[in-house]
Image (tube, rainbow over all chains, first blue to last red; front, side):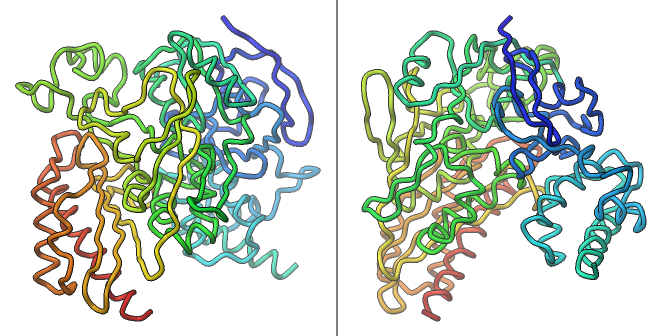
Length: 157
Length: 328
């Protein structure tokens, strides 16, 4: 079975791991302990596995690990600093954007990419950016409010 | 979902190297992987080698200052949707790219990948276990098309959004292989057979799309019906390019996706040239679409709904573009 040494920058740290050529990014990330990357539909349809690759949202369950060689990968684990939640995480906590929690890492990573591009997005832009993230609790109103709350916190800071 | 088959992954850095790798038996190309990876995980193919072309920088280049414009096949759908130069000159292309799946798919998915999207069917896009239980199907490993058991061909539907837009814009595809380069009008890339819908020989790779400059005063748009507005393949997708002479149609091109096994170029639009985009013209255009599309039972949505929604979409596009022209 073909294997290779894979160099990635994961959550700001360079690492090199032996992976199968056919390994999926979701399995690789979870295998190195980043279990915040969730396996939902596992078919590229629900967004639970959303991570950032070079700053853009990608679905780890339909991405070959070896295809992002040399790139920067960010997962939900990168957001909290020194034990303090990021603005988005705190907003999801305060505004009850997290219900069962399973879709939350993907939702937050999609929202994180949006807010980096666009500090004050409209509700429409928030909904478009989260369009590929499915919440099976169907609590979309609270999720959108959470992202808006994080924007308001950023504007007030 | 099923586990991934084992393969060797190659990452060439130029087209010649990619072509040499693709000339070997049982090699397949992969770019964004948003279509291919789920299909591989469902056991719909088991290549020995995957040739990942995302490391070929030349494939992502856009040259929009020359005629024809050249768009690299490796450009992402997110790029096409977001580049204002594309949106200004080719609204249909930007709109079609923006309507493919969801943002994370568009960040990975490429122009060439969307043009080469596999055809889709409820009897095909299923797990190995599901398909085995159903005796497989004509598209893979079986001998019966469950959609049309008495027919002789596979009826899986072509579902790429970008192809109809580029067809009405008059695009050609540039294809590379170890034998050299060739060009093909995009419409000729597609065949109305769900199991062999691409007119590409083994080892051939689409490297770029050539699009003639949009004529001054021409208008284009893409419209799509799907189950969920935020994600999903088209139940029907319609692209239109139209030019007017005063209030009358001077030229009209329409292409469709999601309804046939190919990207369908609508025939007979020349019969509407010289007419105003009034109710009678809209109805005539809607009839042309309803007669030529052949949606089959390849989705969970009824075929007749897809025929009717395609007809509605085409009328809506012409009405909107005529209104856009009137305000120019």
